Amino acid sequence: MLAIRPQWLFGAAAAFNLAIGSSLLLARRALTPLVGLDTINGTNLVTYYLTAAFVTLFGYAYVRAAFNPARYRPYIVLGLAGKLIASAAILTIASFVRIPPSLLALAGADLIFSFLMIAFLRQTAHPSDTSAGP
Image 1 (tube, helix red, strand yellow):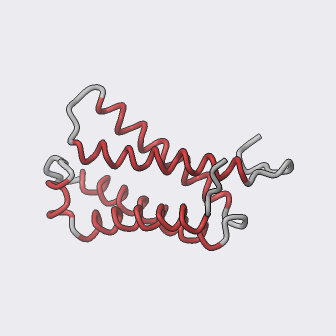
Image 2 (spheres, rainbow, N blue to C red; image 1 turned 180 degrees about the vertical axis):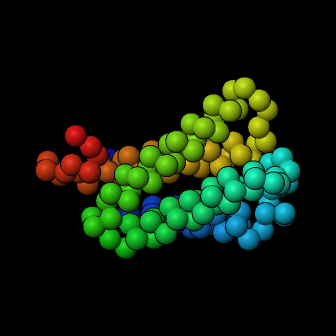
């Protein structure tokens, strides 16, 4: 069985999310063509910046989990759900329209983090653990 070190896993997840989120927040004009996003203007900017803020927020949650995974286990479960939803959204859209490879790569990275987080949660589950739901 692969022993997953939480400091490395959640540290990497934090770095990934903080890099993407802060790039989206601070370098929109440079980043959007690199990842193949259409021109964003008007009220669509609200959705763009909300997405960037949530990606960054998840990065902060992973920082907390890296330092104390037992205490912040609910953050891990929530982050896992976010990564699965983000991947599913991108892959679903990709089944209908052509999506740039860079966005597919981001979805792939989120899926890899998801599988590693699932493995970590299983490895560290306790019989009394209720963080995964009822």
